[in-house]
Every structure is written in structure tokens, then in C-alpha cells.
Image (tube, rainbow, N blue to C red):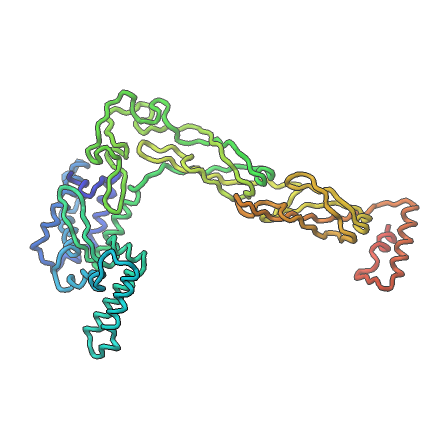
Length: 456
């Protein structure tokens, strides 16, 4: 397998690959000065295969408009691949070898090896010995990398300090031992990972819609039908992108798998768009994409306790993916209507209970609404206007899908009559006088009942 298949894949956009290599050129041009050239040809076949593939696939007679870029990239890879100078030898340090352990050493083995070597080469035990100091620094650097699971994994994979053989598959397979302190290494990984990032798994565009809910729907949860404009499977070809009797041939690039791999990247095959087959006859309606513009309905389960601004994600309910592309997601942004009875504060709700002033004084019972229906609550004797009564656990879920609920608070509103008959006034005046005669009773703002009657 030649060409871009030397990397194991063909990018969806050849222009992206070209752009990536053009980005690399400025970084490697300065590294090519003063390097030995006797072994550059060991890597040139790989780059030439890349060039030939690009030329054949885009039908142009030149490679990226920069004929010397192959040599520049090969030169840069040569820094990583071969011993050119003494400095490159220093780059290729094997942390496992430095600590004297195997590649499958356990954390205990690593720690034990470090302690033994640290005692031997510690500067305090080897005063006036620059060599011991350098050795101790190497030991410490190796230990700091290998003792951390994340750093060790990256080191073993070849993306940070360390050394490992990496094989690039294809006809021109050559193994290169990386020198990871090479300044080009990070640039190569960054630029190409940006290109390959979009090649791993591709998705159709997501869709966001707004959905209005009543207070009860948000509080108790519900199922809603959402209609939206989206790309939907083509009815003419059932989303295949080609007629039922169309002739298909296996894709030579991915050998029918739809995927190609260059470690650590897994990407969608470019020529067949992940289908694994090459199609020469496309559907006339969708022009081979497998999708058309349309309208679809989605049933969405709304959990209890949602609030305005919350978003429900429905995976793969967005735009239908074109052939070889996964469907996008549907994001539903909720707007909850206000309720004339319940006032919401997070997971807590508030409701007013209107009571008479005699109930406020004598106590009693009142009927109040709750999320689960009407409920009887006890009115404390001597309750004050605006006083709250908590109904524990009668509120909304504290988190979406949570079994723990907030509280419901009943706020007492005391109703005073605007008019009283003679008998009522007589009784109230007698009560007011009796109340005023209680020497132990203190009023902060005077006798409210006497004041109410006096101004009535």
C-alpha cells in the first residue's frame, strides 16, 4: 500500500494534509543545517510515497508547491531517528535502562531501584564529583517520569521524554527510535494531531431547539414530542446513498473496513468515507449523501425538577449523518413557565395560606396546595403574619434525577375583616381591654388589636 496509505489512512481533505506539511517546513528548516546526510535516504522513501500519493490523488504535478519540503521533513526526522552528533546520543536516554529495570517493572521495583541508585550517586556522598551529580540528575528525572502513571504511559507511547521504537505501516516500513527532547517532535505531533483530530470519528451537526414547559411538567417530569427541521435519511435510497442494485467494490485503501489506523490515531477512510465500499452509481435524490432536508419528531423524556435554562441532550437525535458520518446530537433548552400558586427557589417552593385573625390567635387547621395535591396543615397558636411553616421533603428534586427533595414552605397571610357587627365589636373591645390590663404582656408596637379596632 503506497502513498498516504504509508501512514495508514487518507485524510478527508488533502488540502489539510498539505497545509500540515507546509506548517512543518518553517520548523524544520533551521534543523537541517550541519547534519550528516549519509543516511537521509533511509526515510526519503516514506516521504516520497507521501508525495506520490498526494500528487496522484489531487491530480497535480507538484507536491504542495514546495519541492524541498520532503528533504526538510526527512532531515528533521533524521534528528529523531539516528545518532548524528554527541548531543543526539544524550537525547536518546532510556529511563528504564538508567534505573536498571525492565519495561514491565512494577511501581515497587521503580521505587526500590531509585532508592538504591540515589544512595550511590547522591551529591552528598560524592562531593566534588560532577559525573555523580549528572548521574543523580538522570536518575531523578527517570524516577519522576516512571513513578507517575500518566507520565509513564505517555513516555511508553512515545509522546514525551523517553525512547521507543515506532513502526509506520506500509510498503516503506522503517522503524525509528525517537529522541524525544528533539524540538521538532512536539511540533510534528501537534500539527499532525490537529489534522488527524477530525479524522478519528466524524459526526453530523448538532441541533439546538427551545422547549416550553408548564410548572407542573417541570416539577413532575413528562414526555414531550419535539418536531424539528433536520437532515433525515433519504427515502429514495433508505439512506444508502446509492440504488439498491448499484454495483459496489471493496475500497482498496481500507480493504473494506472503513477505518485506517496510524498509532495512536484511528481515522475514517477518506476515499470511501468510512463505508468500506466504493460506489460508482449514486442516488439521484440525495446525490450519494444518503440524507435530505426534512422534518422529524423526537419523543423526549423530561426528568422531574428541571428549571429554565437547563438543557436536555438526546444523543444521535440531531442531523442524520451523511454516508460514513455518525448522527449529531439534539440539545433541548428548557423554559419553564411561572406558576400563580407556587414560587420556586431552587429545590424549595413557597405557597401562601390565607387565614383569619382568629385562626392566627387560636390556631387551627388550613388546607394548602402541594405538588402531590391538597394537604391539611396545623396552624400554630399565635402565628404571626408572614410566618413560615416548613413541610420537609415536599419540594422539588435537589438535582435532576435525584431522590432527595427540597422543602415546601407555607407562608401565613392573616386576613383582617374590614367590617364587624356590633356584637363582634363589643367582644373585641372587651378583649382589647383585657389584653391591655395584662401587666406581664409587652407590646413592641403597641396593642395591634386595639389599634385595629380604634381605626376601624
